[in-house]
Length: 255
Length: 329
Image (cartoon, rainbow over all chains, first blue to last red; front, top):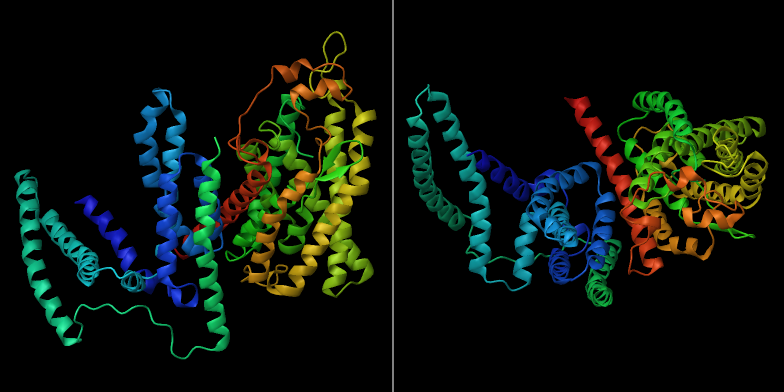
């Protein structure tokens, strides 16, 4: 159940990103482009056989992180230690088996992936992310399921934690409570989820939301300067795609 | 001016580190008192500029090289205590990650470049401003440039003395030096000739040009009057341009005086490799000499510059953020 708290915190950070940072990708590059570049970078890093490409991407991502406001930097850096240390620990046997480079490369790849996703989460809100998925023609049912699942993780996580707290407060020295409590909490949470799902369907009907996600539309009242800025940001991100591919093939030739 | 390991005796290194401890303590206290938490990230930007400045090697006839440090630049922007912390952190990163400057000699390097340089440079800058009654940004930038020239020469003088006293203090029965083999008669002219001419000029140009640029494009970043200093877009662009331009530092061939490797030292005129150097510590950095085996030098240099500058800014931003949280708690 302690894990539950952590999962809830991580997912709450995803869904609350827009509210916390007050940032909108509409002030920069299009979310769909950001998502495409991020996925491509992670994919190419995973495919790269040596550390050069991964190191190049890490350098760029670190620079991007450094240029964010201090609170954003802190939020990103908080996400890094756990997965990186866990990977290093899992890869530790490679050092004793005579392949210390593997440990470094894999750990760097994980650091890179987490860093890219953390920056993406910092810059793009969850609402914009679903819009970006729609721009990629992802099936509506897939986006709806993902969106609902993520939001329900938070709501049900909060609910089950409140239940857990209540049970913990009432548990006085009897060990059998622990087992009974877990089953009870999960069962009650399941029943609650059914009610919430029904309420969600009614809320969707009330708001005339039929499960079709609109692509991110740009502000209607956009000045010429804003339009140019957005175009420049989009162009920069679009240029990153061939740059990443070229850098990948260039570094692939190196030993 | 980065003194590598084994050039100074462990005793000298211990004395220099002990001398730096009170300076760091006072600097941290002064920074906490005088600088707002919003200004702490600016120290990171200053440290990044200093780090990048040190990567632009300038050649000198005779095969030696040198570089700017930027300590007076940070002192002019945020005060000498902030400059001391910023340059110390930049030097620590250089020593640990890039093997530039020794681990044992970290205290000595900090004494020269993070204490003497910014404090002397700042004092001279203030004196020049007072004497010339400079009020305009251009006038202040000129005073800072002159101050930085004096500052870097004072730091070079300290480094030369540290090198030069080694043979007299630490030698074997045959009279051979155990550490740096060159006495004051060689180290003083060798260090000062470069710094009084080309390297001093490079420091003055680096300080003056960046201060003038900052005063023109991001005046809110200047001096301690503003409590909400922040990095503007022009400063960010300048930082990126400097990172991309660092391979220019590779055009300077040769090794800086007093920074030779153990294999090179006998051929520099010493005629032998001092015993203390061969049995000294040998720290392996992650990216030694700002390069990576298998990667072209220029690419390795840019990568090192980007990683180093980013880490410095991130560290200071995290410190500023932690400070704000502690204040609100």
